[in-house]
Length: 328
Image (cartoon, rainbow, N blue to C red; front, top):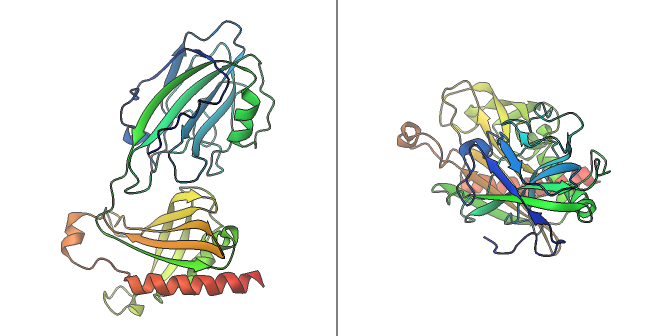
């Protein structure tokens, strides 16, 4: 975890108070504000400076392993007469936002609240819930602006700043396989394959994936359908069936992860994913398979991991070939 202050080099602003019904300053972030639930918290504030004409609300993790932190929620042009946002206001439609307010895309490029998802074993991350009191009624940035552009624009208009900080941590996975390969291509070219449902079929080294249906995935929660043939592994006689791939993490050109939902209940809850890091000569791609969250009954069956390390290594090789072929 970083110890830097994200406000250290910003213009000074008068402090005021923000509280949350489920948040405690310095406390642990509740499950509702974690990835998979993605529920924006209730926030209320008081004591803003005289002259405040509007507010903005931001949620930022400076400890994300990106080099620039990670923005989870950004709301602009909240009228000065509003001093509270209800729980769930940051859904896909901004249903709980006051008239005139709007959400900017977060770092997953989704205009909504994105729950915390620190990488396993990366230590505690800080999440800064901030209400900015501004001296203008409208901050004047487009709805598709980046959080950084909003922050730059707000810097000269900020009268006050109310800050509440909570933490979240994901323990190191107990059952996990990771393999890496340097692929001589840009991160966006690799990511284009990984976000394409047919790309998953193209790079499969297990022989189980027969086809896919669905649109390119763009955010956590997106889904697509895959036609499977488990007989390719020769272990469990499931034959041909279908599953839904559910995206759990998506950071453009940096990380994608998903779980699989089939007809069985409860769902198995094993995770597959890729991390992408720029490197000399291309992109360092790490493929991982994590079965640490499956239920104890399935663990006792001793069939996990269903995909061995050799299959992940082979898939990375096929991924390199697929990226090269698609780039021609």
